[in-house]
Length: 99
Image (cartoon, rainbow, N blue to C red; front, side, top):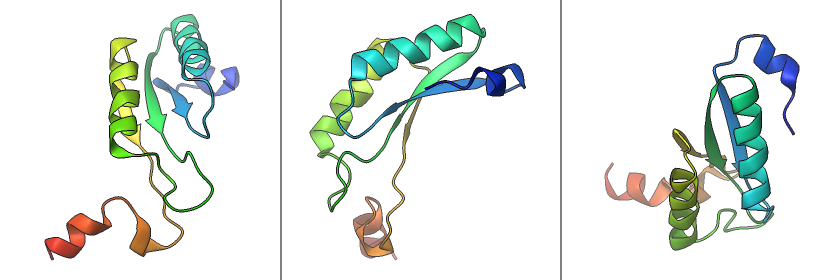
């Protein structure tokens, strides 16, 4: 859902949310329409698909969502990973190996 008052207030970006197995085409279309109406740039935020670990979808599926967003004209792509347990975040393996 797009709160048009926020965009009239000066935000420069409209973000679609790819989450919870919601329709990617519908969210993309709504976001692009809102961005066009307000003359703003738009992007996609990839976030949780599940309500249990692993919260995010698989790597190949995340990549496909990024490709889909890019092919539809998204200027920004953001992966949102707020792990309730810091040991389960997607970047945790990298930090364990490199610290």
